[in-house]
Image (cartoon, rainbow, N blue to C red; front, side, top):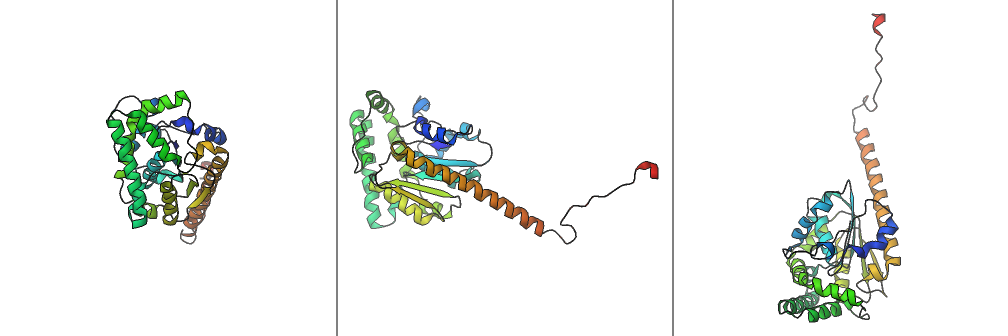
Length: 285
């Protein structure tokens, strides 16, 4: 399951779906975007977002390989750490997840948190005031980081303007999440973290802190990529995701074999192996 960024849609993962070539691949539209854009009864928390994904999660059979980018990364993190589905997550890939509350711990990081909170307030207030175009401009300028501003097609920009009303809800959900560090430290799922060198330093720092907190996490940093690296640098990102999924599957096989061996070794002496009991045919009696 792959979860997209704010103002995006599941189509963001088209190339990844092709690379995986799996019938089990799911890239749902997060509430407020794509085919899920109808209505205004949107969740204000990440748990609420997960609840909206229930119909998709119910379709998943067996272990889940979870991928999330930006706001979708925040949802994926929450899903893998505290949701009822956490035990079924076999691997986790987080591409610049929006987990700003992780930055409140130290004075230096707190400044980054405050900057994120300010842009959230500016964008949200513009939307509440009806200045949607200004909100979209501020939003895209922030996420451009130190890289060039992304050039959107007229239809793409119109879609962003039409769906921008969801942004305050996304910001609220991300800023509402507490105990991120504790959840990251307790995470036992094979985790891949990815970031771009041209992205806002806020998300680069979030990824760096997660890498220090999550036991055994792998980290990949693309110096020439920006925040939209799963789209702009899909040829670099997707192979990393595929390798991570393969390694997680192989690790699961090894653990299963080890568990089976331990169970056999734990059986009482003389009962480690099943024995056939031959019974005489009835005509011998």
